[in-house]
Image (cartoon, rainbow, N blue to C red):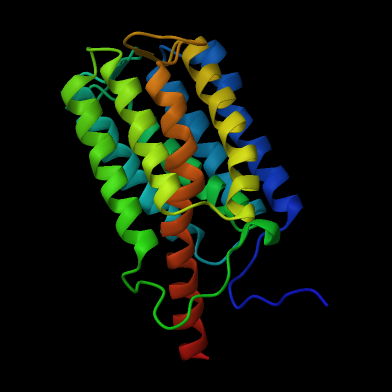
Length: 249
């Protein structure tokens, strides 16, 4: 018998549609990279079509998280010199305005992938936000990784060695489940391919590129950031949404 989840799992069709919508910005960047107004219109229309055709309860929450957290990360990265965007901007920060909404789309897209039934973890006992070893380890790992890159971004191999050491320690202290390993096997190559495509199209530039325009530390970051840290936080949000929905029924 198929395991029942109280959260709303995603379908393969939704994920396929999501990946198709994520391909649209790649095509647009090829022709309109330096035309911020046109890119903004393309991203806006693409998002509108995406929210009409892919309807999942709570998507707007993840969209706003992406807009705020993705945009905030961009701003801090600009300040710290981690990378820089090449298109012109109308914002008081060196970020093209459409990129903020694109971040919202990216977070929403990964929400779909994370919620495929084969990747959804066991239901939490009690509050989804209870403080456990996993949450503590992930928050500390995330904070240390950000400190390393903000402090040593232009001092390779310190970032790469530091990232590798911290991520290996996190995996040793809280070993990933088989479900998480499978997700890592999907997310890491997908993320690296997509990021490499954005770099190849000229959207932004990193210091000390080692492979396909990406620095070594970034590829290590992909192994932790999305399939472990973001997935863990998103799943807690999913169960919070499900619990509040059930309470309102």
